[in-house]
Image 1: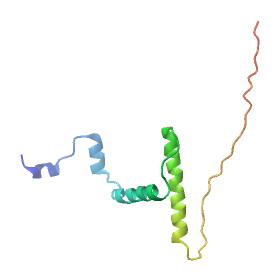
Image 2: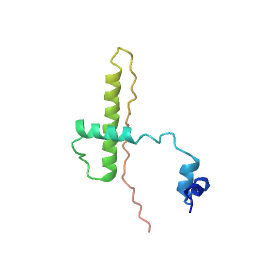
Image 3: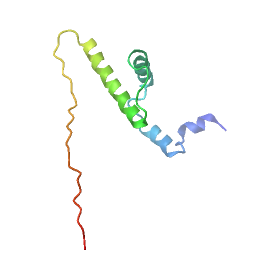
Image 4: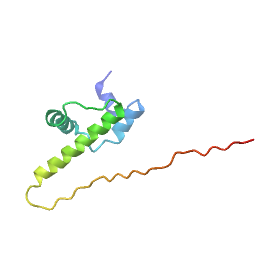
Amino acid sequence: MDKRAFKNQRPKGFYRRQCKENPLEDKGMRSIVENVNSVLKGTQITSLRSKKHFMRERELGWHIILYDIKRNIKINKSGEVQDFLFLQIRIYAFSDRVIKRIVL
């Protein structure tokens, strides 16, 4: 079987065809992501304190946001005006008392 014959054929799997036909723009981001992970492990995160999986993901997300803000402050120390987006959390309290009706 000639290896050059495979060059012109479409891949067999659905996801393989998707990757071949629609290449991603962020394809070479793995080294950058690994670098950020190693910096976070070395400087900020000794261990995640949450026990549940989704809370661990949320905690890691907050650490990444904090890392980005610190990095922006270090880069922009030239005296420029800096804008940061902060999350505003509102907590609403609802009464959960259920009115019981007696049906005769």
